[in-house]
Every structure is written in C-alpha cells, then in structure tokens.
Length: 75
Image (cartoon, rainbow, N blue to C red; front, side, top):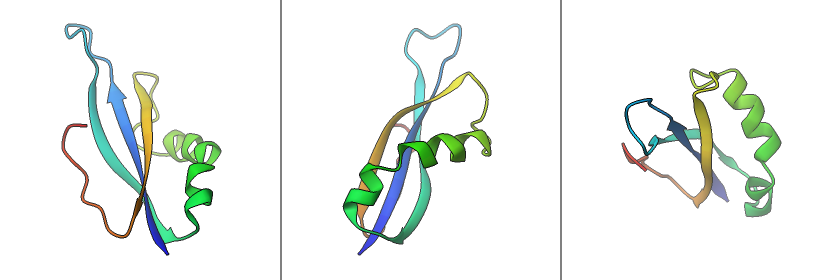
C-alpha cells in the first residue's frame, strides 16, 4: 500500500508566542502502515539533511496517510 509520510515542521519566531507550523511530505512509498509509525529515527536523519535542519525548526508531529496527500500550508 502506498503511504505518504508527512512531517509537521514548526518554527519558533521570537515575537510570536505560538510556533508557526507547516506540513512537509517526507516520502511517498509502498510500505506497511507499521513501518511509517516506526519511522521517527529516519525522520530525524531527514531533518538534518533538509532545509529544516536548524535548531529553530522542530518536528511537531508525524502523519502516516494512506495514498496521496496534499500538505496544508499551516498545520
């Protein structure tokens, strides 16, 4: 089954009390749903090699969505 792994990336801005979050598709691939739920170590590695590698970005959540998924601008 095709699963889309979505990371909710949050950026802390100094003047705003709540972080600004956005969804980013990490991978779309054929995998069992359980593999997606166990993907946290792989997401940490993905973050280190992405535009979100700075300390101001945090992974606010992970979604495992069957099939195609269109990310929302703000999560």
